[in-house]
Amino acid sequence: MDYIIGQNRPNATGTTQGSGMLQEDGLPVSGSAAPAVMDGTEANFMELVIDASRSVPVLVDFWADWCGPCKQLTPVIEKVVNAAGGRVRLVKIDIEANRSLVAQLSQLGLPLQSIPMVAAFWKGQILDLFQGALPESQVKKFIEGVLKAAGGATLPAADLLVEARAALDGEQPEQAAQLYSAVLEMEPENPAAWGGLIRAMLALDDEEAAEAALNDVPAAIASHADIEGARAALELKKEGRRVAGEAQALRARIEADPKDFEARVGLANALNAAGQKQEAADELLAILRADRDWNDGAAKQLLFKFFESWGHDDPATLLARRRLSSLLFS
Image (cartoon, rainbow, N blue to C red):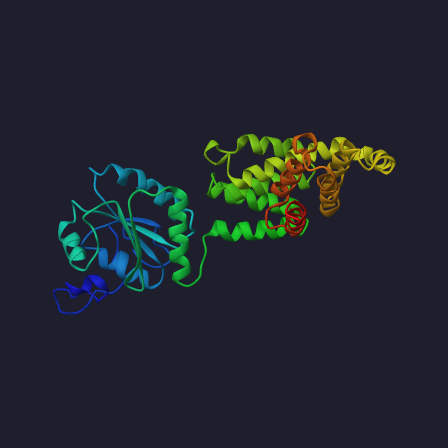
């Protein structure tokens, strides 16, 4: 039965079956019109998996009705595949209804003794596999790896996130908000999209919308770094707005008394709200230089909050971190 691993299957006349088979409803099972999720059998495995995988990666989900973890995994993998926009397909194989096929695949080395098991096929061959019921984040990571290995494609949501980040960095927050919202329609628990949407609302000076979005974040991802960073940005925006009109008076207080640390904290918040990140960090580093433990380390705590809000890979964060390390360990 070597046709299982990619050879065209001979039919009764001695010719071979190509990719023109039809499903029961008459639709082609391969090509751009094929659905993203299909049920497979021994009869159509060649068409749905081997032949189809010559143009698009095909995941095969081996399951059984008695398998509890299978019932957890299948809806998750269906969700991710359906959101992939046709860049990957899923074929579900009931191992109890297809014992002969399972026996052939087991002989070829597929570890089907333990299910659920998902194998990724590309160009007629097995590219990768995993066993067990993985969470959605790991299923996405697996599929992203398959797409990369099969030619470097990415999931649509990943493409939109790149565009959204570029729009936000390019001071086009309205477009960024639309793109982040589009990602959330596909992936309602995408923390990068929620964090980006909140930041886009802040860039539009709509704190009310940012707070509403923050309150709508699913509980499962509420503590994710992207959400925490957006929450910090919202809190700092509010505090910065409160002290924005006091900047001149705060500078006068600091000029009169460089150890007026309350004034320096207020000025740091005002500078941060104005987008003057490095200047904001300077005020807090000045406090730490003079008294590291002032107000139970309030300056360092606020500086870390700035880092969280700016993003840990932001140039201002990296520079201020280096200066903080030099100060603390000198």
